[in-house]
Amino acid sequence: MGKLFGTDGIRGKANRWPMTPEIALQVGRAVGYLFRNKKGRHRILIGKDTRLSGYLLENAMASGICSVGAEALFVGPLPTPAIAFLTTNMRCDAGVVISASHNPYYDNGIKIFGRDGFKLSDKLEAEIEDMVLNESIASFRAEEAEIGRAYRLEDAPGRYIVHLKHTFPRELTLEGFKIVLDCAHGAAYKVAPAVFEELGAEVLKIGVSPNGLNINSNCGALYPEKTIEKVKSEGADIGIALDGDADRVIIVDEKGQIVDGDQILALCARQMQKEGRLKGGAVVATVMSNMGLEKALQEIGLRLIRTKVGDRFVVEKMCQEGYNLGGEQSGHIIFLDYATTGDGILAALQVLAIMKKNEKPLSELAHLEKFPQILVNVNVKEKLPVSEISGLKELVSKFEKELGNEGRILIRPSGTEPKYRVMVEGKEDIKIREIATIIAEHIRKELS
Image 1 (cartoon, rainbow, N blue to C red):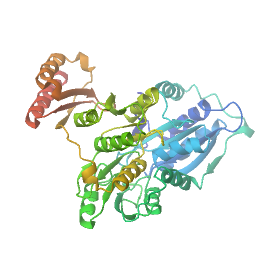
Image 2 (image 1 turned 90 degrees about the vertical axis):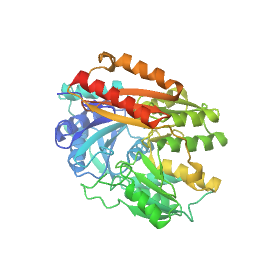
Image 3 (image 1 turned 180 degrees about the vertical axis):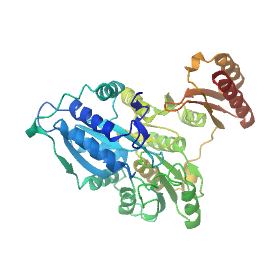
Image 4 (image 1 turned 60 degrees about the horizontal axis):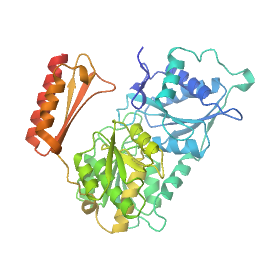
């Protein structure tokens, strides 16, 4: 058996190790045991997206939680950030999300939030992993009268909708806005339309008919083509494409042009700085964010602070150093004043508020001069630390000198697959393609 936790919780094919009901039950036991309060009831919130396998795993998880004397609170299909919010709002000891985010329906995953609404530290994940894999939790069972109960929290969607509406300026409405909204047949299929409609917008809905098998299937943030097409054909003001668990968003302007996470960060940073709401004079993003974002922020006196890939690392840096805006190019945007994790609906609301305040179309507000960026995936038989691949350091050093201050090279191994990702960025498209190809071929040759 390998490790359970990857870069964002546990993930794999549903009903195959590690995403089996047996593992879910054990994880439930470990979470229920680990997050006990000293006094009173111990309550663990369980949410999910719309995958068929969600039923299988949420019930197994609840069984594990109840077996150690804790209570399980079911909230049904809700976005990942809703679970983070509700965990703190309901004063629960932990929150669990059963979702594989943007992956196809046949995958599933488990993400865990502590009582503070933040994803778990590496240390806590390692503790849970040890309890599950070494069965150190096996001997702990609640006494007969102390076995936990399971409840369904009926008003969970309403609580989250109210929370989101409170992040939108009270003096503004969305009346007169026509919004195309793609929920990817995922967790936000009910709450997202309700939020925008209750604020006054006309909402044209896509991806709001989940059947357990169609989540993320040619729709949502990974496949925004339908959103683009509908924005153009309907003359909409904006398109909003969420992923399966709605923790990320890709936006489409009124001309049908994609506005990605880097552009959203630049747009929001400018507005927050203007209003005196941006903390620390910086925005936190990952090593994948475009150099164009860095330069745009520098022009208005702000810094870009980079972390490893993964929204949890962005959030960690924000918390450590007191920043309140961060995110990823892929559309995870974190507004720490309102949320503890990426929230696609919340991010879209902030963009809409900026459009209303400035009375300008999104195409005028979201312009960002980007550097060409090439990403090549290299499949290999075995993975070594990048520093141990023969001749790679010298090759990269040579190309970095050629690029100077007008480009970057980033090589990182995949956290879940036998592959490396080679990213090259620079001003000349032909040149960076050539560099990326040469580096990728070198890695392939050395590790084939």
